[in-house]
Length: 240
Image (cartoon, rainbow, N blue to C red; front, side, top):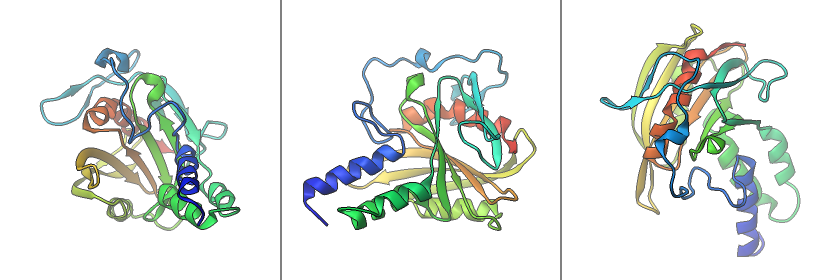
């Protein structure tokens, strides 16, 4: 499998596939100092307010671009609006896995890539990076194979496949575009760091297979600050 240094390098390359880059922090990185809540951006031209935990008020997210339709940054079975300044990028999981299956440390690279590009019954298809808006985290889109249209079952399998996930609470709702969906709020625990943070996701069924939108974050505070973007996706999601 090569040297330890080689393994670290491979892990770094795989991490970059889902938005990590030198000099910036991803979901598991450290926050930059001096961030203020005002940097997240108040809504302009958007109505309604997203809410997190009981008693907490979150400002509605200003709209950025629309993802899903042909020609958009991520072509998907669904379409939804992203928050202003969030940067979307399509993820071709099969291509990335094929590339990493070649060369030195191929076995290790493939294992790491599979762990990051697949979760339960779904595969990474798109990620929307919050860093340009001043928050550390991602809204990621995962797709399943046609025929697996049970949104609730897919979502439960998605959470079950995440190491350290627990305290999951599920409920059904309809997106703003009228699509039946199932949402989950849970916590994930990093046993090595002894840290726990909140996570959110929701799933819908489509003729082209299930779609899961997952909101991570470096920690619970970052997660809650990004909830308006998650709520915006829920309010605007419809079938493509």
